[in-house]
Image (cartoon, rainbow, N blue to C red):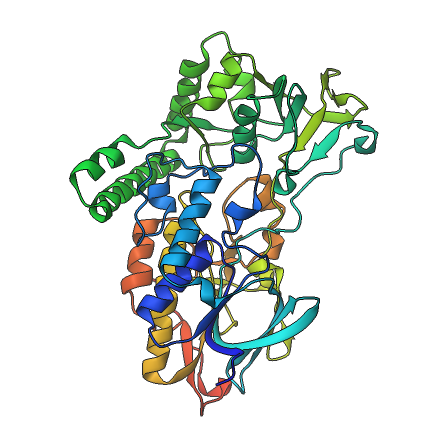
Amino acid sequence: MSENHFDVLIIGAGLSGIGAAYHFQKKCPGKSYAILEARRAIGGTWDLFRYPGIRSDSDMHTLGFNFKPWTEQKAIADGPAILKYVRDVATENDIEQNIRFDHKVVRSSWDSAQARWSVEVETGGKTETLTCNLMHVCSGYYKYDKGYTPEFKGATEFAGQIIHPQHWPEGLDYSGKKVVVIGSGATAMTLVPAMTDKAELVTMLQRSPTYVVSRPAEDKLANRLRKWLPNKLAYGITRWHNVLLQLLFFNMARRRPEKVKERLIGMVKEELGEDYDVEKHFTPSYNPWDQRLCLVPDGDLFEALKSKQATVVTDLIEAFTKTGIKLKSGDTIDADIIVTATGLDLQFVGGMELIVDDRKMVANELINYKGCMVSDVPNMISVFGYTNASWTLRADLISEYMCRLVNLMDRENYVEARPVANGVEAADDFLDFSSGYVQRALARFPKRGSKKPWVLDQNYAKDILLMRHVAIDDGALLFRRAHQTIADIAPVPVAAE
């Protein structure tokens, strides 16, 4: 077999890709694989982002892999600790030897006659082609080369530095500087308290408020359990405890949004006191979980606000000026450094071009299948995590499903598995989320279907059953053997459940 042909090609060596490699090695022994990584390092997000205070906004007992216990004291971990965790998994399981760094996938073409993908990569200033039977895309959901930054009037007039968190300058000295962080998402909530260590003043400038929840950085239950139980058992108990709490809170927010909103705002008032204008700065217009909640470990943001080292301004930007920002209200904010924490630029399957039998696939014309495949695209699985829980919960399940699929195809001598949405209408956008970074990108992603298995649940418990136990051969995923043609595998209508 060619050294450039593999049973599976995994795209991306971040959290999802390293996890996928572990599962594949364990559950599909003897099968060949390689990981194609566009950058020159393991870790994905956790290696790319270098801004002050970089951390997870999910607890590591659910963001961690299901096979590798998190044993550090802090459950809300910083970026370097998470990066070490991912790299440790790669080292301990000899995954590194299968990674091809500086391999950026630009185009993947499926050939039904050969029943394989041809994957074109840019590496070392040239283009190479590798082939595989199945492609497992773990490239995340946003562009690594550039974050989203709106056009700000007068930006060229500003005399200081303008920085996007995705491209943080190494060794940036912000000592004694006035810093304005534009945004109210997880990145802004992290940067503001972190930069108060040196800055004269840090201002979080937001167009509108976000729900903010304080949570202890350390998980007392996990730390207690580890004293009495083996790490794996303690991790499993903590993991399920946190998963169930997340599901309970999410479902309650959906059923009784006003009650949950009242409680969330009440908790902020308890942190900041009655004199603080919580209604203006911390009371969103939308319901809880219409956008992702922001987590602040040990209330660090609130502590920074109470100490007057940081402040929040809720207003619209009129223009940048030489010395700062002019607001629509007429007020101004002085700044030496402006950080545009304005979000990510989302893309489907790493932005690669997808071609199936010479037909260029348009993502928004496709329908999502089980949250991991798309209609009419054979032998491709793509990892996309939860909006209401930790990314890795679903990433692990999808990788396990990939292994089940590979083993089934091997046993039955299938060469192709193709989701066919026969009679299924697109019912909705891929994600039911009102966040700006999601809304800007919906046209780049597949749709959701109107009935199972084409719907997309944000429910880990349901997905465990779907991905681990429900039969793979469900009538919507059609299989083909080498001697058959596409016409031989007649579409089967999917029965409503």
